[in-house]
Image 1 (tube, rainbow, N blue to C red):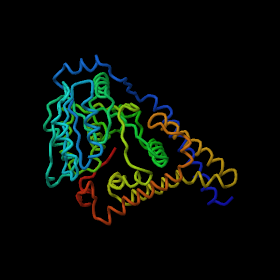
Image 2: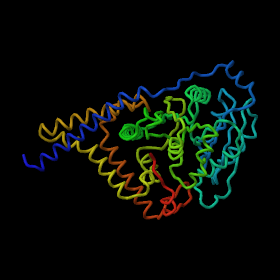
Image 3: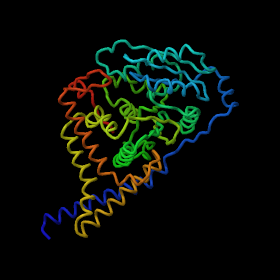
Image 4: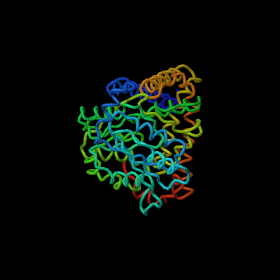
Length: 400
């Protein structure tokens, strides 16, 4: 056996060992992540909640051209079992988003609920649209807790009550609830399981609550934070030109020494993120290159690593036995990753592991497309607004 062949075989076993290590780590760690559970409220719960007039939580909902989803989001917030102040921000929408918000605000509001609508007509210089909308809304609030969410989320009626109680009991300053994806096609299932299983390669949710670990969390769907902590870390004013504003908020909270917590809560918050496999891949155009700090060499290195991790074990299955054994170990561990992702995130069949090579190719396409489109444009077009690459690079920072 030549030296080159020996090196290649050893490298294939290193890949198998890496998959085994990460799968066993997830197997041990994920059960330690707490889960919220809620039941449908009865009439007595609703009556008690409605008798209290002072909300302890303000929910901030920025929206730009979300006419198809915003009404369901706001109505699900108005149906919560605890008092809540909702601040909905129409961020320069060109569709009916603002009109829908105004119509909902003009309707009779349930007791203990408050709905304020803000309209942004022009974006100030030096800001991205979403951070500006969230910072503007946060300045209108006076509650001890803030929840930053997206305009396409559907909330279980008890989720705010349960999340707030859990954060208080745990002494958390920042709580993130993992959303469940609404998956409408096999292509969406294929991409969702791939995203979820691959995220466990670098992200360790069971270490989020460890103050000595560098792992942090921030998700646009559900960032619940103490108002005083939000202001102490600079709020979204400090993230005014950050594409990954939600992730950066989590980084700053952890860096500031505050207590961070992640919880699972299957079906407590739900969203349909994108239509079809290609829709999911294209939805990542603005995010992926930003996640690598707009550094081409780093993104290309990640592409190479992903290709080797996902494709080398498949190729090994068609080679002689010493190679095939390493490939089989990797495939079994990847299937374990898929099984864990299905159990703790979206409920999707582990059989979608068979589609991993297709999903990997689409993600590689999305990564390269994100870089090429951003570099060719000289910036990012996000919700119809152009943001120059030079400014984005200047404000980008570490995500861990």
